[in-house]
Length: 623
Ligand code: HEM
Image 1 (tube, rainbow, N blue to C red):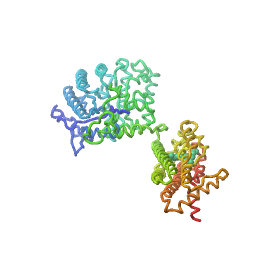
Image 2 (cartoon, rainbow, N blue to C red):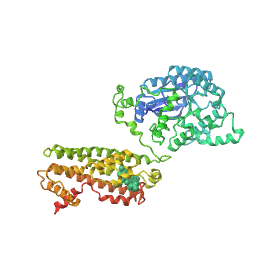
Image 3 (cartoon, rainbow, N blue to C red):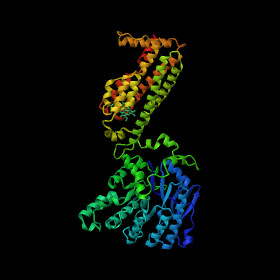
């Protein structure tokens, strides 16, 4: 899935001394402190620490690869807007940084695009600079959410927004120069409290002034930081609109009518908030925005959306589909996941030929990372772990089935050609892999035990009636090895495919059957006659194994297979035991979501063995 980040920032590595250039103090400047690090200063006041991702496209692209971002639309930083300065200075400053943005994009291997800035205090100059920028390659404009005391419903700003609509420029509204600063001197409160309030004020100003009734619906406008506090206060606004004529403003419809007229980005940093935001705005109005690479930005860009429990199609819209509409760019571009992984390989990677295999296209990494869909709403932090651990088990179960099937095939061939040792050797080799995998599976429960019982109980209710009973592959392993319990099929009736493959396993000769079939072919075991009881057959098979061990010199390879099978059996019992311990640790003696008595039921499975004759043979040997 393509990933587009529409809200992130840049600073050039160097720019002229603006205070000298314009003859006025307190302009932003960059102070490089050490390699790859710098401070933004405003006059002699410290403003922000930044690092080389702001100006170095290589660093940026590497971090985009790390986060799985295909395309960034970069913007300057509001501290450079200069709306309170003389127009000539603000225009010159805008041109300088707009050209610097394009220069940075030109080194971005097609994966960096830009929004320009304009001197919004002067509508004509702002419109002219926007047109110049669109012609030179910017996709739109980032504007501050107010010009001094003028909100976005100011006639000059509205004229500019008309111009944006006419020119087809996307508009990103960014809060700046936060209100109430004298009451927020500490703790970054202007950013954490002031910014959301600023943005909300802008959205409300556009709605209540009736601007959306007058602006063409072709205007594409987005508000940063999830639209600030707007969606949380929409109900209050709506209530006021319906019940207090004075609060209605000049808009023709209630405020909620205008939600499809603007976008918001996803920079809200909390799953509950994202759910609420998407629930209120709709899946078509929210786009990935990260505030990268600033300190309050999303640490792993896109992770909030990826880890949400939104449906896949909604995630696709948030990660790229909506941005493609907002930016009016084609849904496919040459910046794909394929060249992402190439770019990650080194500073000047060769461009991949299209269609060639890459790490992630081979391993289907993007698809894999989309497969975790928490059910809890808002998603509980530990549910991702719960899902991932189970998925990892299922992946290893798949490999176990793959290897055990190969073991069966080898032992069958060994029975057909009793003097060839290759198949027996190969069976033992693959069984060793199975034991190593199972050893890991036993250990892996410890990871899940880092989850507090209370944390599991917080989302356990969502899981019913799903249960481990329904693990098709686990049951397949049991059936394949020889532990066949037809009753267990009932848990798979809802999934006909699983039911059919388990039924097939039930009817097929098991690993245990094939093993003893091979001993029969070797003449170590007499085929059972019709009137021989189950018990007698069992004892005969145990004696055949006993015979192998007694003649170690001639049967080393078969003894090796027996040892591996025994070890595998032993490890599966360890798995059952560790699973019970986990269950007791997490839910005590509660019933299972599959309807069993839980731990006490599971304890009954501890005596189950795949290859009981191999164990019986040990008793015979000891006699
Ligand atoms: C918090 C963690 C877990 C709890 C509380 C739990 C609980 C249970 C319970 C109570 C059962 C009995 C069936 C039922 O009534 O639902 C069960 C069965 C099962 N669970 Fe888990 N389980 C957990 C984790 C896992 C994991 C990580 C796996 C890995 C695949 C797993 C695989 C199974 C399997 C295969 C069964 C069927 C066992 C059998 O029939 O012998 N469980 N689980």
